Length: 214
Ligand code: SAM
Image (cartoon, rainbow, N blue to C red; front, side, top):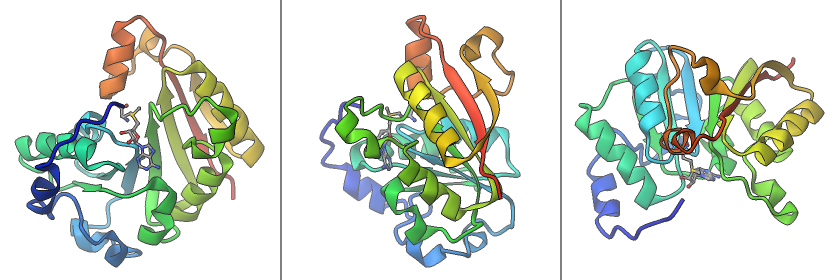
């Protein structure tokens, strides 16, 4: 994703601590205090400009969503969308690195992890940065409930193939695979910004659901 410098982003983020939680480590093991209920928590790692996580929150009011994104200049776009949608009470954002999830979530805090159009990092020497690398799968397992699931969409065939192998080697159970999601578009599919862009170019969208085994 191309990053534009937005000097106003840091101030705008600070003005909305009710959406972008400034001290997420404080809520480890007690995210129900943030949401005011015990509903399941689904997180999206690499949320980008937020269309997916906002759409999911509006579609599923009984699930709590947390979008996780590294960069100010990107997460601020998600924040603008959420403010324009009157800040749904079941949605928050964290400006943190997905590699540090264990600092913010205890075992069982998270019910599902979404990964959408994650950066492919095609060079072999960068494989550890892929969000479906075994190192990241271990982190997700450490914050998910037992038998928790990862739902993953991408346009990138190489990353999809890599992820299938990585999840299989990790010992996860594959529950669903589509090599062309839009050929039989599920009614409840919420498109991400990248999904809209790449599907308009005629590229197939790959999707899988997999589950950690206990
Ligand atoms: N999910 C969005 C979509 O489908 O439109 C954005 C896709 S974009 C290619 C990947 C996003 O993941 C970028 O915004 C990037 O900053 C974010 N990202 C990459 N690695 C991350 C990490 N370790 N933690 C949090 N966000 C990350």
